[in-house]
Length: 565
Image (cartoon, rainbow, N blue to C red; front, side, top):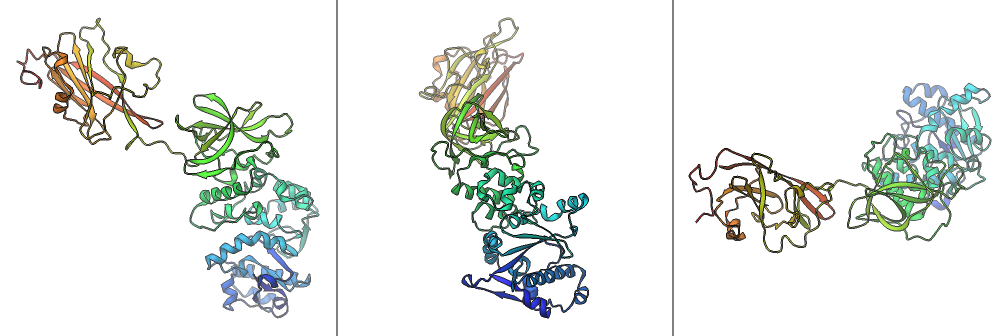
């Protein structure tokens, strides 16, 4: 651990860094401040570029570094006057060029501030006293109360003294704890040291950081590690959200406080979906009054899996695949009516217990909890892709030409041919009320047919008959194996339906991705909309047929029928 030698800085005007082993750390002061442009860093002192012998010498440095040098000089003089030989300053005592050292320092920083004999909080542009209302307002609006790292620098030390930028003492934490509590939202008795930091719920501690900002995005998570007594490696470049999720995962390893999940997303869209873990401390802005029940009931530990966060929750069904999950947290502000804070979940799959959080802009209130279930909540839910292979691909006959005798020209489905076994043991049709498929498919015939996923494989052949006797054959199958394709042809009316074995139809199947076919007697439009349900991929097939003025007899039966004798 490195320190600035406060006595040397005071007496001879030289900033000198010394290093102490862990078992040789002396009693020391520590500085809390907000970084400005061109701060004096460890490498500046190491290379001997920073010296001063008087305040006048400071004025001769560059304007930006003059502020930093004045701050460091004042901190060293204050420490020396208070009887401390050493003072720790983050900007000078960490070699930020060394990523391993930086990671160790940030992981240790809460402990370093906690172990300091005194912390000097240097507030740039703060008033020199707090006797008047405008001075208190100016103090409360100071940038020091808006930065991420200064939160732990306020909480960790036992003794904090606030100074203006003239190094005039403004007040002490333990004497101004009620005023500071109104600024920060932190409990006054925690600031005073009468109550442990860990007595505040996870959500409450998160709420203290909800409005604070950091220069580097990832630091919005890293600056909170000490407040939750966790450690994790620094991965600058991972982004703020990933860093904050990692922080919450570390918290879950040590705490079963479910107030961690009692957040609301600001400015979210109505259809937004999310995991159980918040993306940012700002999500806890309105969660300061959330607290957990203590030892409510035994639960299995949380686990992060490849299917999402595994957790036991009481679920109340709301209908339409939506549930309200009760958290082990009483409802604020009275916490006395035996109700529970709830969050909304939507089920992702019909075949397992995968869920996603919905209605993320609000929390629910639950008076009677539902069944306790083990669920998996995905942190990064994404819509299932309709591309590629699924365990089963299903043809679902949805819309077709209704057999309407009142029309001048109409069609009716008179036969359906498919390989043996493909029409059996298929999943039921997707529920649709009313079901459009039953307008044209006889009630005893299947609406769904299992697709054979071999390349250029026919799965179903539909035979339609026009009211004048002309027939149409519509074929549905695959092109490459995982996609749907079609074919359509005129069919001689004199051919018996039982004279068309599936193997003969398969031999004539010329699959195409086209959706429009023009035959002699008919114009056909076919579409297939993929719909994913659990592990099944349904192709919702719509068929529209338009009659032409021709017939095979009028055209002289020009070999269009491939199955004529």
